[in-house]
Image 1 (cartoon, rainbow, N blue to C red):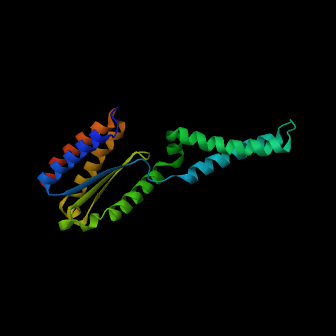
Image 2 (cartoon, helix red, strand yellow; image 1 turned 90 degrees about the horizontal axis):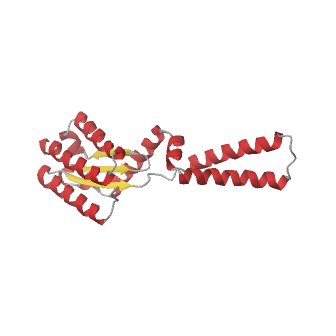
Image 3 (cartoon, rainbow, N blue to C red; image 1 turned 45 degrees about the horizontal axis):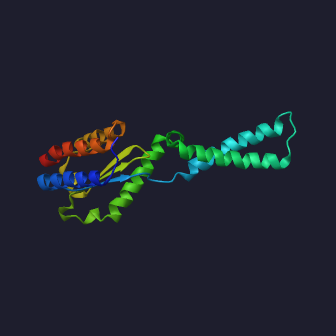
Length: 188
């Protein structure tokens, strides 16, 4: 699997320059490792498991030293949170698809503002955010681009870009999918 290294960044820059020169759109693509820290997911899972352990220890027919009960509860909380950190797929599953999508979209909109995408000439900027932990692609066109490109085309572009998460070489898949977008953007 090819990583997102300096060669990938150069290739991405080249693909985007090619898209911009042939379509007139101003494109920004970014890869976010995580849109949020999802602390609530880690805490809720940790507290739930530690409460289950505490309940078992309180009602089992074995006597425990009260300090051990306390340490087991805290240890279970930390262990569960660490387990979710080590296995991000489990944390993603516990968070829920709807919440993941919402957090990725919120972060993409904030990035759209921070990057000054609203100040593009003719308001034809398009921000493409690959939220890696969430496995979501957010495609945010500025008002000019949104008026020119039909909604069904934007949706098809987003679906096509989402396929990179299932590819064996995601870096190459991103470049290929962006090259394919050039043809669609040239039409509008």
